[in-house]
Length: 84
Image 1: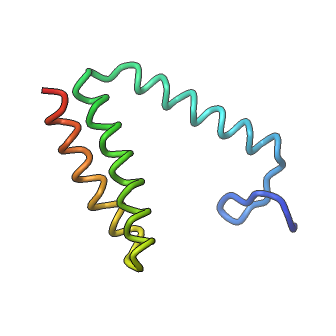
Image 2: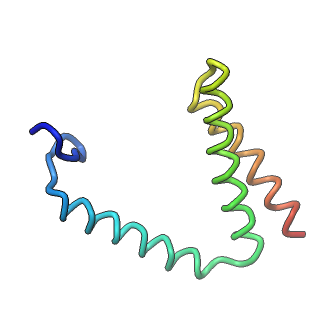
């Protein structure tokens, strides 16, 4: 089917995709609510670092996945240090 979102090779309707996204987002919020201050800082730093690393690596012709891994590790460490 052209123009429909695919998940693991199976076509999904738009309403099923929205429902799945809402469930994933809700679970993420519940899990994040149970984190300590240090864990919040580390998760935020890791996410921002991974996004930044992927963008920089892709822009410079490198591996976006490699940049995301390195950026995520650095961001997580920076989040830990910032929480102290």
